[in-house]
Length: 156
Image 1 (cartoon, rainbow, N blue to C red):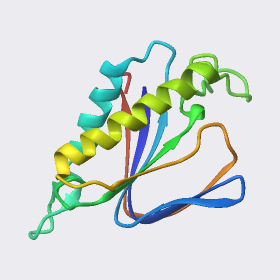
Image 2: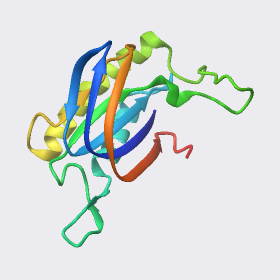
Image 3: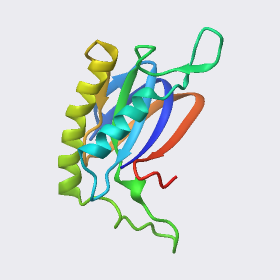
């Protein structure tokens, strides 16, 4: 499983031309699934992302997590995170999970994300989601910018 995590002051998502999700201060997280990913990888990624200390404390140091600040998270499915650009000019997507499997993975990941976020914040409603396999437009205001790449297999 792979993720691109971006700290944002706000973000919104339109799916097939219809406004669908929006968040305030928090994280925009683009996630992609590999064919072998299981709930073990989902939980690893959730723990890692929810615990990232990338928000400033009162001293101005990046010492707080999205849960610490009560921030929001927009989870955006993105198969292109498995694009392989090492040869040629057209990326290969053969390392990502097939569409039907990835759809199921994203559905289970959504359930786990909601539960994990509620457990860590003590509150509901901090998760918003994109729509799998639709044409999405994302508008976000990056904060910092802070952008991190995470791979459950620790490839980078």
